[in-house]
Length: 260
Length: 327
Image (cartoon, rainbow over all chains, first blue to last red):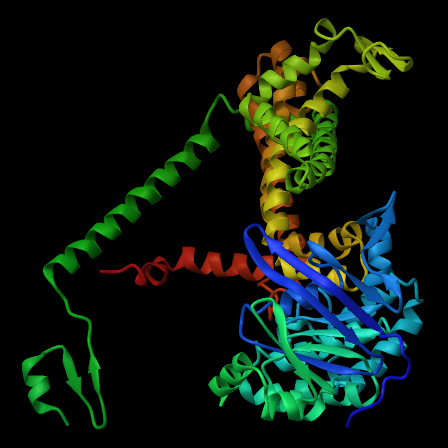
């Protein structure tokens, strides 16, 4: 189910991303291009830098070095007197609103119902009228199969339901790109499927997705490209069949062998 | 079923399909039960005696108490006490939130400024702060707003005209309260999972909006209970401003009894009013907690009446309440 990229310019371009936490060099120069409508799965052992890379895209972590570019626009930084300096919070916030993010631990707003979670950003950040936002949100909750849970608080939802609300919440901002940070890692095994189904549907609808995951079946079935990371660098990447079944690199082989 | 077991343990009764364990009566247990009843009776007698003293005492003069309970001067004192409490809490909460954000900020200057404020206002007695603020004029004669270190002046005013009895009282109570509110708000904010901020930022909210819309509302269940306690404490501590002749409840009573020499009846009036106000505040606090608890618990906590009813039951039937702690 490979879909050819629609334009030559990538939707997202990551150039030479480094991230250091003190002495801990987590990302050691990552370059990655993602085309519009492409689904890229990031795999790799814990601590390989998958999560940090995702968080560097929308500047939840500020990269120590390197640039993230969305549709030709540099994210989180601008050139001032020949040097790259951080963008003011308001501008950064505007850029972030075009990138949806789904977290491992859902991070639903606990004091708001499912519906209120979904309409919060459109009404507060985009200034969409409440009526219009409720209309969109109701449709999104229906899409993730939770139309009947609109008035439920997160505490009353199962993990899978929470994650599906979180996906609807991110989609409510009509993002150009969706980042998934191990979206099923905190879920009971029998619930994982319902979240993956929603993500499958999203991919089929043409959403550009960057997914850090341990779900190899999902990566094989849905991804256009699988990227294997280890030690803060991309070790190898390619179509799922190639990377998952015939990896060329020793480290990839070892990682995949451990999973089977 | 277990004949051998019944034989070996007298306190176990055998039935058709199960055995029941029975409580054992030991001399120590009997002694404890008797002791418990003796203590109860002593406490009850003491309580009755306190009530008897209150009711029959000649110095309390219940007629005088009844007369002054709704006396105009006292009522105006009650109103002033309430105003002081509301104004003090308003300043305390507003400044407390700002101080909390300063303490949580990454800026070292902000951090140190807030910490210094806390150190000063929590480390000195409120009574001293009230007196100090009231006499501020002799310390700082003029209050000037302008460019510091000899720059041009925008606004300048005589401290004496700014610091009246009322403004000194409100400011002292509010500034002191802010130091305590700061720590309450800070603890509340820290109790909210960091993922909430990250999710807000990822959706394109600014930090300020995330704080206002997402973090603070969820910090409320943690902030409200100690804030209620502080408000009740402030209600009572506002009596301290009587030393700068602020005409609140206690000072009004003092004015009356220093002329009439009916000290005890008027202090009883003062106590009754403070008790009435703190009782109402406690009930109000309970409903506030229930309101802000939504979404954080699966079921609503019991209403005040339900809770009161339960407590009453346990008071009336002491045996039941004591069962859990029994021998």
